Image 1 (tube, rainbow, N blue to C red):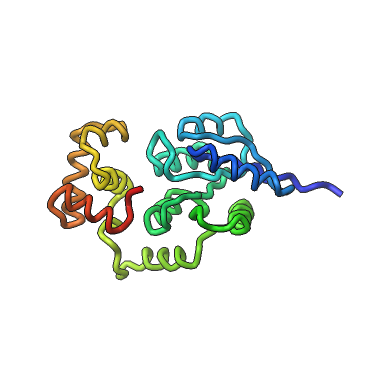
Image 2 (image 1 turned 180 degrees about the vertical axis):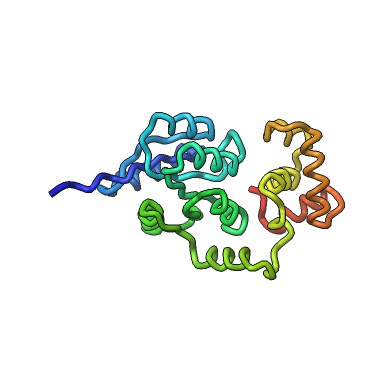
Length: 215
């Protein structure tokens, strides 16, 4: 009888201890195999060029290019690779944006190993993995009349800039992190203040803290 090939999983997380835990979990399942691992966005994208992989476990907060940029690039270069986002960030921060950018599922790291393995298999088979809470959020997001928080009205790049402003970073620091000009960051800042109906960076810091948008 021909044996079914193992699902090849690439682990992308900047914490070595987390990668080690995920590796052990995967290696304990005979239907799964580790294809590789990386601790930053550049290493991930570089490795995928030469590494046969079926599914990437992708952390939101890795060093390198912004999370959504990394996800977009991964999906453009490797459309056959499934992506399951695994994050410490609550679903209401990143999940909808991640799914819109091409992820097949979003799972917070407080879920059980059994839930993670279930998500891996569902995503590998071409399905989507979302929690009941996230499913409700998606329904609200698709409902044009639904009440959405101000930060949900921002574009992906505006959201990235807003989170950094909310963390107390300066325009120059944000420009350096996102590899864009300070003038462009200032333009985004003006749009953000207008869309969110706030007057200053201090207001954004308070907002980000209230909604748990910063680590």
